[in-house]
Structure formats: C-alpha cells, structure tokens
Length: 210
Image: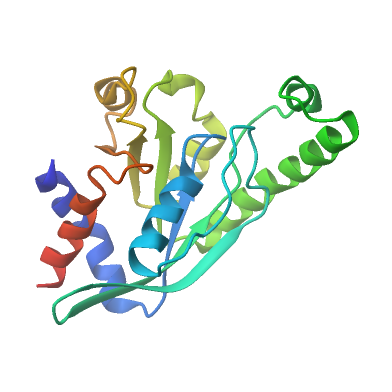
C-alpha cells in the first residue's frame, strides 16, 4: 500500500511541493464521508487543533474552511501546504431530510440553503486546487457517493486525485469495492477517526523529501 502512495506522491505532489510555496490540498467528497474528520486528524497531528466541527447530520460543513501553512516534519525535513476542507458535494439537498434528523423546519431550511451555496462554492474552488483527495465512506456504495459533476470537474481541470476510502475501522468497510469503482485512481483505505493508515501518507511524504 505504501508503494502506490509513494509513487503517487513522488509523481504528482513532489513537484508541487518543490515548485510552489503554498500547495493547496483540497478535501472533496459526499456529505458525511469524513472530510472534516480527516482534516481534524491532520490538523491535530501537526497543529494541535481541530479544523472544524463534525455532526451525524449531513452538511455540517457548509462553508469553505482553510488551514494555511501546515508543516509536516520528520527530523530536518519539512513539507508545507494549505489544507482546504469543502462542503459535501450533493446533487439534491432537501430540507425535509434535515427535519427527519430532528431539526426544526426553520433551521432545516436555513441549513439546506447554506449547503446548496456551499456545493456551488466548492466546485468554484476547484480552480484553485493543486491536488484533491476525494474522501469516501468505505461502508457505502461508491457509485452513490461521487456524482458525475465532481468527477467531471476534476477530469476537466486535470487535477491530480487520490481517493481516500474512509471508515475502514467499521466492519462494513469494503476498500476493494471503492477500488473497483474507480480503477483509474489510486485508493488508500484509512480511518480518519482513529488515525489508521494516516501515517502511511506522512511516511510517503517524508520519503519523498529525502
């Protein structure tokens, strides 16, 4: 698993880190896939603080969030990047779904409006991304999580992509199903919540810097 990560990082991110002062690494994917949990894991590991709040109710993140100058260190080696956490990409956002989760109608409608704007903003921000991690829930059907809009936009912009199959700590997780759905991309199974395999990405970056 480490080999493909090293290959991906070496081939794509390596040049970016060396040529650019502030590489923008974007986290994209469906609502509740674990983007913010992953962002929090990275920020906790290297900044000692969370990036955003998480919730079982979809679309907790409704605005673009950015953490600048995250420095990953290993001995005398150091890599720096800006981490961008985006709202969950969805083709349909219905306030009634929030009501079913226990929200009041007024709050649900407000959340739906903000979430819709967040999706639009996330797509616009793709123009500023150098590398994108598409974070998916490994326990769910991959075909229902990434719509043609986000994949089409990534292909059109020729943005390097690594798919992160999150929640491998859960029994229903099936990384192979994610790999089969997206054979054109490298897939790395992780548990952002518990940090499983997160170190493999860091290790690959350290090897690259050496």
